[in-house]
Image (cartoon, rainbow, N blue to C red; front, side, top):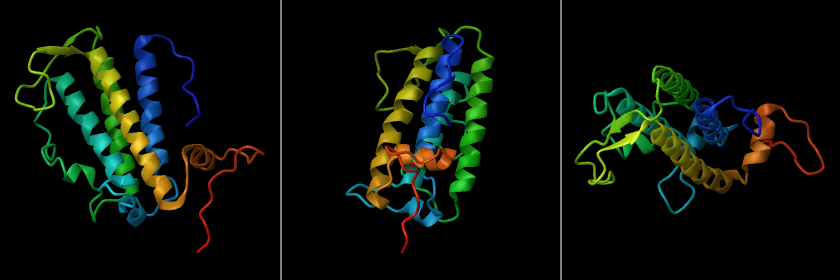
Length: 192
């Protein structure tokens, strides 16, 4: 993942590229962590790096299901609290595979939509969805996905920093193999 999104060709490409960058950003917070470390909740909240990544993936699946008209049909979507935890049988590697599959699904669904202004009906009876809005556009959904994954990437940054002091740029430098410089040292696991 480069530090910046490449130049984009058009609106659709831009939205998908910035969404991909935010996915990469939240995933880099787990760089170098064991599965057990990814489950740790070092702050006053119940949030963990693994749980935040899992929630971002499940949340994206739900929104793309809305776009494709299959909202509520995917198994496990109703386990709100469980979708914020990396379970004992789950691994970071497995989660990344599932998140990559989700990203591919999102790109395939969006590729099949001619007009990003296409209406996406607002499900009724969901407390955090507005009652006075009948539909969003596909464009709005993509912008919301970028916003929500960005928000949770920020949460994951704080949780990760609480675990071992690691921050985004040194983690990204280590994950990407950037050379050390006077102003940036790639993250390395602390001894002990």
